[in-house]
Image (cartoon, rainbow, N blue to C red; front, top):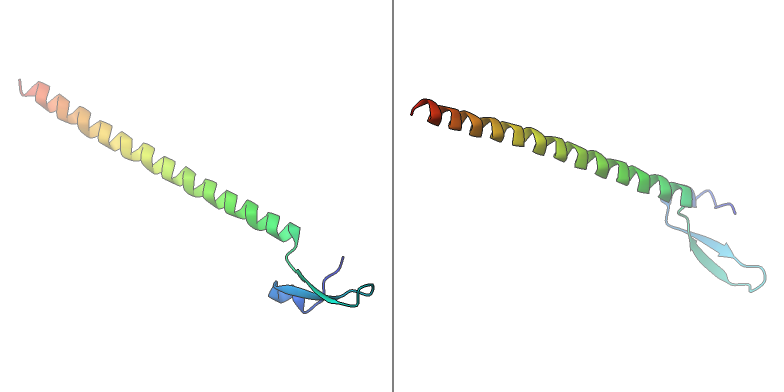
Length: 79
């Protein structure tokens, strides 16, 4: 089913004149392929943000562990 050219750039609605009922109907111009592409782009960006956050947590934990070990080492040396 083809959409009218004016509907393509706007992405809102398409007016359809039904021959059998002689009524004007409206339907959405959004294509399933475009919606799927947007969904997977969102999922990919969410996974990217999650991976970056996880990497920052791991790096921060290493820094804090290193500081704690250094503090313990200094306490042991001072005895």
